[in-house]
Image 1 (cartoon, rainbow, N blue to C red):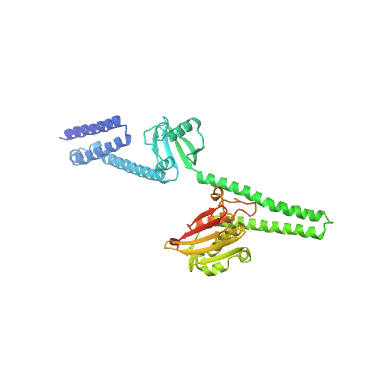
Image 2 (cartoon, rainbow, N blue to C red):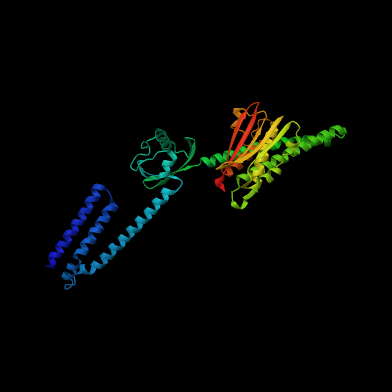
Length: 406
């Protein structure tokens, strides 16, 4: 009877092995075949354990003594497989959630793995098992990767994006990591442009100051009238230089400012308007200053709101020779609204989209930073700024701050 059980056990064990081998042969899934083999073996051992124990316990058979050891080995291998599966699952989660496009490609340029950020970058995806050269649905993306395989470039401009490619060789293939560096590149270009414009704007008053001062120092015979004229030029350019430096520092401070409830207070709007720098408006004989405000209080940063209104009023005064400048503030259910209207020269359509850029000036005077500062502050508080202007009639700047910020 024991011999029969031995024969039956080994026969089924052999059948189990053959089944696993067939799965591997037809599906080429080693891990699945191994798991199937282990599961069937465990089921077989569990089913025969009682019979084997009864048959072999009186014979001291070697197999029966080895049997517990084999069971432990199988159990440990099963635990290792579970750990590997867990590690693989965690790795796939990381790859899926990083802000980088990841493509795992074999030596035949077939995609083994791709994450969802690839779809975000290119607007289309590539399925596993497809060729990286011709497996894309979008022709432009297809052409891009065909070029990458041939040239192995590191940075490329694609569909208004700047993409950085990194290719890492591995055994039997390679990994492509794609990063969208559009914001970083734009920031670098903007910074270089800012420094270029700033250095040019700073150079102009400094050159004037140095020139007039040098004239005064080298020409001792200059009469009192010319001396006073040159000193006035020096003083005027020094003031322009001081304003320009202050505006640059203010703009830099705004860009690095992080809105916090610690710097927001309930502001009495009427009291704030009385503190605005509007003496040049009140003292102007040819310009009427009109103030209309129905907002009582606003939860805001006082310094920032003053800066916005002062810059808008200065801009209106700069381009208005006669007529009026009106400051109006009111509210509706969703917004606090501030308007600065003037009867000045107006702004041509070609300039209207550019006047909020740094150092952009319609006239040669001024720093070109006032409206850029206004826009940065408005966006800082999730607001919006609109411009209505007609050449020869005047301009209206309208700013809205959402009440939900409170």
